[in-house]
Amino acid sequence: MPPEEIFHQSKKQVIMSSEDLQEPRERLTDQTIATHQAIVSLMEELQAIDRYRQRADDCDDAQLKAVIVHNMNDEMEHAAMLVEWLRRNVAEFATQLDKFLGGEGPIA
Image (cartoon, rainbow, N blue to C red; front, side, top):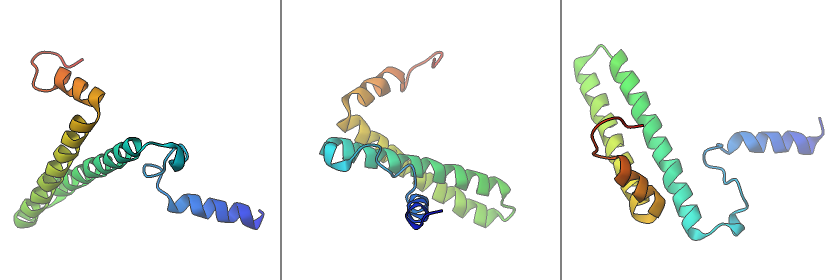
């Protein structure tokens, strides 16, 4: 394998796909970049919630479990703040939230 290909492969491993922009940064608007940052941050918060939930379920120590659940709830707060940022800054996101949040009956 040529050295430039090895370097290219190792470079790809360092960049997480969820953080990587799909298009050249210089061609994206500031709004698109900010929205991307919010979405990546929201994904990370949701992943943290999932990890803490699983860890809490698996924890046998009641005091430690309470700390883990507390941490999970903090991540939920962070996720909610990011959703609110998206609602305020991405019009169609706000439209979809208004359509589905707080309603009754089937979601789909």
